[in-house]
Image 1: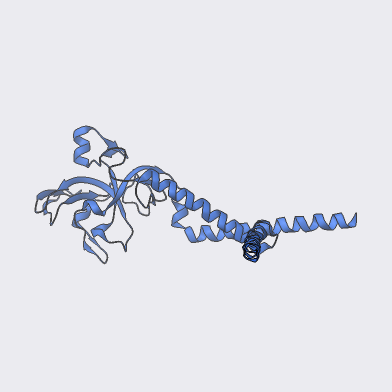
Image 2 (image 1 turned 90 degrees about the vertical axis):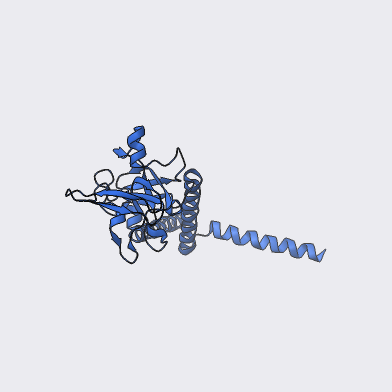
Amino acid sequence: MSEKKTRSSGGEAGRSLIDSFRESDHPMVSIARDVLWAVAVVAVIALVLFLVSGTWPAVVAIESESMVPNMNVGDLVFVVAPDRFGPLQTWEDGQASGYLKYNDYGDVVIYRPNGADSVHPIIHRALMWVEANETVPMSFENGFSTTYTAPHEGYITKGDNNPVPDQVVSYPGLGQIEPVREEWVVGKALFAVPLLGYLPLHLIEVAVVIVVLMILWDIVVERRKSDQKTGKKRK
């Protein structure tokens, strides 16, 4: 009998703590509730994006002008797995099939240069697939051309606004960018929303503004409640 009472009292204590947290008018508790609610909403959105896209990150922000004019700084790009909604197509594949994405042939891929997790993914167009030790021509915008021998199989990639393919340039801290292996591909770009990408690019500033607004709102609400109580007492 005493054991049941102990369990019952423990359950009531747990419920009372939850109820107190939910119903408390204390400003700090109210802010904590708002933060938890915001975190829960973000978590649900992230889960839905992952289930739909089949990859992560499911959204990326354009940070440079390498894909101008087809993608611009501040665009928020929604990413899907390479095989989602059809196979990944290179520029060569698209030219043969007529497949266009972002005003040119082939898919725009998001990949980790040389497989490195320590750097931001690159978002460039897949030009062609090469086999290990395959030699392919490389043309530059100034009319100069050369050949490139692939050290291993992978995609040759290039920013639409860049004069040369990625595989003939060096990345800080990584050296020359290699052909993009399939396992280095995060996904392909599905669609982009202009300007919305500035939010993740300035995440800290946005978070500070949101927290300040939440605090100000709670202060206003508390003052209204206090004024209402004072008015009732005077009556």
